[in-house]
Length: 333
Length: 210
Image 1 (cartoon, rainbow over the protein chains, first blue to last red):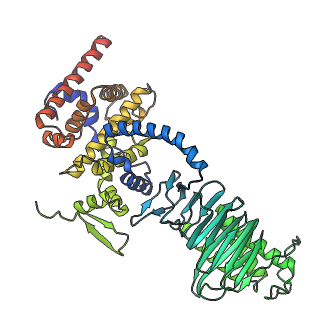
Image 2: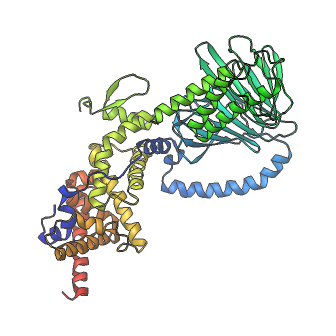
Image 3: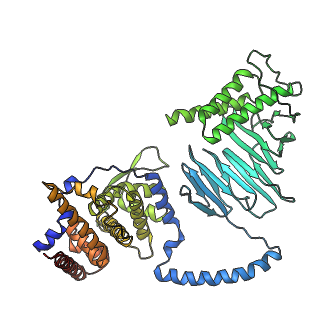
């Protein structure tokens, strides 16, 4: 403290009354701050000092001018480049592992990643991935994907789903395909919106595919199957031959059957089309509600499906989804 | 110097139980970009950072959370920067960074010309200045506003030195180390800071006809 009494007096509003400082009334989001710290420590910007930044800015300006001039010519020659993949962490923890190191992504901030390594979400985590034009993937909670072949300009783009769920919105582009690969199946889009989940059940991991719009081709050990809008496909276990393939059915909108109705038979060929439609609709409704965050609505839809169609081919998926949703409901209490 | 004593407990993600971490281990982890190390650093420095911000800004509302984040960003940026520092007293050093952030915030507010309208170090601040009567309260409030405004407009290094020395209680040798100057230079900055404060006060008295 200064020995000058006049200075002491001038500073007294800040030096006195320290005991009267308020308790911490504010809320500081530790996770967000730590994520930001990690991001700062990983950014390359830190390697530049103030002078270097000025130099870098000039160099960047020159590079941009060159790139503008040369880029078009290069593009016309058909050269392939590997542009980045834009990832936005929507909630929870989203971890990118381009190499040996992992880094947490800041919520709400678009981050450009090179198409390599893995991306994973924590419990309650969610991320949106954009890779070039016409490819948008939502990575749901507790999921992990490999980005290695998600090349934004490649002819055949591929996303490997290690665990969890993804929802893909794909714009069909002639001559280009996009596929999601799990240990049991390869789901090839034909211009569509679809979801793929890997459920690590006790009996073994299962793959579940649900198509919202358009059409996908599912290739698996036992063959391949085309799945169109509102249809689902599931593998009983990835360690065994996939069993259930929901065959395309004529759309016939019928009210859901009451619980007293006869139980539909397991054999899909003999199943009444309207029953399958209703089952799929319920599962779809549940999944859509879950994605929107309406967990109660999702649980109701899955429970209805299980109550009305206990023998449904989709029952195992509904049970898995119901268990997941209930878990989330429990954790949110 | 001997091996650093375990100072904090942090949960390493790869382990099931809490592991005591030394300051050296934390700093090495931060340089390596490890999340657990950043979390440990945050836990260790959070009290000193928030206390410094509170003490200078006298307010925990408004953009306070942002200032906490900015402080930690600067701490990390400086720790891993090209001019790698040898931090002797991490808490004192973090406090100086937070003081710098607080001073920048004051300058920003002054620039916005909202210093006296914001109420961010107005009404709420006056509650914390002990005064027996309303008149004394108003006087104390004006005095606090004037001081914050003066600190925001005077030379940044001098203001920071005054804050570190007179408000946060750091020794000159610490300040010299923190600011990367000699002890003599720190002393000069402090002295000039005091003179500047006194000059502002004299000008104010003249203006008010005292």
